[in-house]
Picture 1 (cartoon, each protein chain N blue to C red):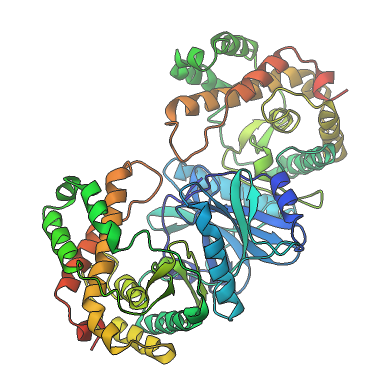
Picture 2 (cartoon, one colour):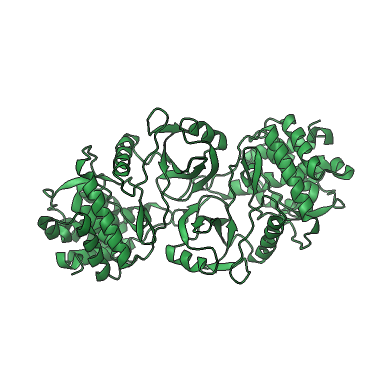
Length: 319
Length: 319
């Protein structure tokens, strides 16, 4: 939520000289992305987002992310693609950080989505899942089930301090996901399609952004994450069946779930809720309350985890 | 350097409904302004900056600031003006904060200005000083000489911890400015025209921004602040005579200094350096080193203060 590495006008001009996109006419740091420094750049040719990757991001993963973005943009998806420099490369160095220029996407993120917006994001996710079928490079999921036990252990006794029900619920979540449906189809998926990573304009998806949690993962797990993100009230207290039905309908238009995927939805939803619950708990414990970063409420995902542990495929599909 | 008060899509849509400027097509928090939350808003009609005033700003001052911006924009200066709602008002409430929509200005802030850029900002400052001659509302300067003794006292023994020479130098600065040239002409001036508050495009000033330190103050003090900001290397170690001469030439084109003002420049420069030295020391002492806000180096203004204490008017004018 801040710019960690400042970029001066001289730095920017020298950086843009490596591209064939004119010179800067506007330049502002934007408060987006918790892991990177991002800037809005307008040049005489167009608009871009300049991203400087901070040390929290493993630089070895950057070629994979940028190849995925380029792959999706080339297929015409609403994914802002990386801009190639004069030598055809995407990655630069700027002020000691790996840096990249990405197309600017119009649109606004919704806060409480409507059913129509859920249908639109379902259809866009289906397009994404179709488009990655021939994207073969692999990136393991650092926040996948293999890491959840360790993450829970690192939260330790603090969990009970956040909420007395948390230790028991996390234990139930870990037990339920011990048998993970690894035989389901995997692909390069987003795994973080929350509303703030989707731009919409007049009900149309204009941008799927922030792919820095993307990885090779069970494809229907991406569906489960998106379901968890879009079909509950933000605080997790209210489940919106109409949104869930719309998400399923939109996804069916452009991709659709297989029978084994549908059957595994409660398990995948449990895993999705557990993953965000654990990372939010970890961040909650490790972020000082007075930091300028907004801590996201873990309880919103405690409520979702509780819901998925008792859910059926039909409930998740909004039937 | 962050967004303190989040604004959701629904909040934004309801806010924009009060204006006749269409609906949002893009919306991003920007990492600008240490006292307010700022957002880039593009609508079907144009581009704007949405500012939410955080509690650090005294809401009673807002009508004065907005009246000044409107006054300057109406006179054709490169000052982005506030946008009137359907009822002709500038100030709204949004998410519990006073809020205002301001025109978006193109341009990029320079880091190390050239002499030509100093001439351009000198001319723009002169236009500003001409344009405020009929702006009569008064706002006292909360960071004027009356407050410097108190500010130094609040820094106390910490000053010596920042640099061993600081306590003595601050005492000399306070003594030198005890006789403040209060009889010089006063006006509503910016008093913070640092490079990051000036947007330039192809050598032209396209935006004077961030007027939230503006106040009724000795007009030539504004010249002294701008001189301190633009005519030294950022670290204060190098004085650029060519920039100073260009600043003076630009200012002379559009306004110019009277004889009494010229004679007072060393004193005004001493005051300007002392003001920024003291506020930077205060912020340095009161900002944790690991905060996401960048602490500005007080020593850059310690060096300037030392320079002004030995300066002549001719040196300040780059002669």
